[in-house]
Length: 374
Image 1 (tube, rainbow, N blue to C red):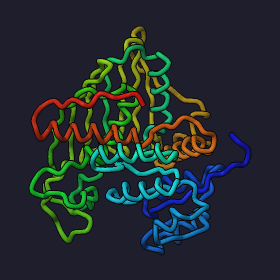
Image 2: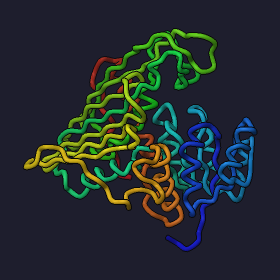
Image 3: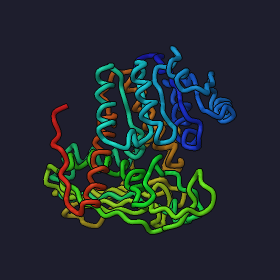
């Protein structure tokens, strides 16, 4: 820590996710200074400004970006605005965190990462689940050799958010062709999942996937009445990693279960670990561990230091994970620490999403580009 240094934060977007996750994270961390909030609907911005003690309100995102008190811009807006707003912040010399996905095409995300490097600003993708205490413990076990050589990785992100066709679907990109299957859960959920798995298992080498539409008619935000839309609401994929490990992946909008529906299973030569991020019975997550000589999985209780100050396993998962993300992100900037979960990582995730979609359309394995040294 570096004394009383604080980071001036400007948040673009005053919708539910900003209220549930982003803003509580900044408000709870004494190294973050909530300078400004922006929304095209001023009443939304005013309400959250009052709730979280934000000093300035904007309706024009570029005015917030150009505010000299704003050192870091948080892009918490609809998907199609992530890239242009992030690029505007980078070009203004501001650090930027964006909700995922950064871009629909990986090449645009790679270009944004390169621009940030050129401009000397830091970036982060809102991959919330990297900041689960259970997931971070598994990552530690991977890195310190506790699990040994990694053989298998199983990654799931599935819940029944859109099982009810009357619940409005929002993940439909502008200009999507409604005459063919529209990738959706693999984009909205898969980007998180593919990042988590890559973080623990290393670079993807090849993937093959299957995408499907299970609920053919549903309400779509911005349209009147039921719409017949072939949106992909369930996907599975196999993965081969450069390390030789194998992966099984699944995303689903319609698998019965609670939020966020993330499960990560890592099997290695010295041990295995299962993190289950499903809010049930007032508990946000569980962690289990087994070894070759004690194959029955036992529950692991993490120390209080694994959680952001003021939180426990009973804290709602959006706030728990995002408060962790915010404290790591702010410290990276103020203390010049190594960056984690950057736009480059977002680009790698999107690259794999694109490859899985391509594999489905072409009915074949798709190889990922070999990774060059960063």
